[in-house]
Amino acid sequence: RVAESDLDFQLEVTSRDEVGTLVASFNQMTRDLKASEAQVKEAQGTLRSANDELESRRRYMEIVLGRVTAGVVSTDRRGRVTTLNPAAAEMMGLTESAIGKTYQEILPPEAKPVIASLLEEFATSHHDSIQRQVLLPLGGVRRSVKVHLTSLRDEGGELLGAVAVFDDLTELLKAQRAQA
Image 1 (cartoon, one colour):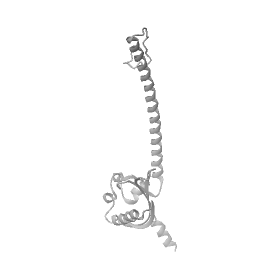
Image 2 (cartoon, rainbow, N blue to C red):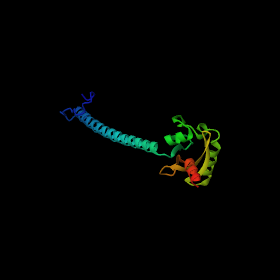
Image 3 (cartoon, rainbow, N blue to C red):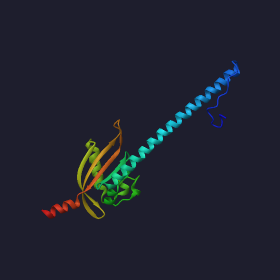
Image 4 (cartoon, rainbow, N blue to C red):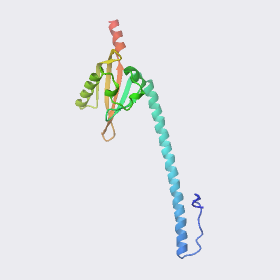
């Protein structure tokens, strides 16, 4: 019965000799198995709940990033793209296939020197964030883009990666010039 997962099964102890000790040990083992099974079920429930919460947060963040008009790109510590919102993809002419690749692999050749210079400045600044306005040639058009780079660190200060937020100011600047 125990082999068939009936952990409520207990044998009667009818003697005080070795067989009685063996029966008592068997009964204790089934009680311990039942307690362990309950702990495992509780842990599974907690894990399921935590996973549901994480999934809910992930979906929420995707919705937020999908609605933001600024381009948002995050990278891991090796510089590989981990997040690319629709605004960034449209602005830079990228697709979901950019995920997992470095900027050298995904950006057009004319944009690489601008980004490389910005990243070098960021690396040598010894600050956790910088903000610059750059002229970024994308899709045959030179766009005036405000770039905000921020390093991502864990609680211990270990570098996890970086996030870049791109605001395309091209149309705003054109409108300001026209108004002037």
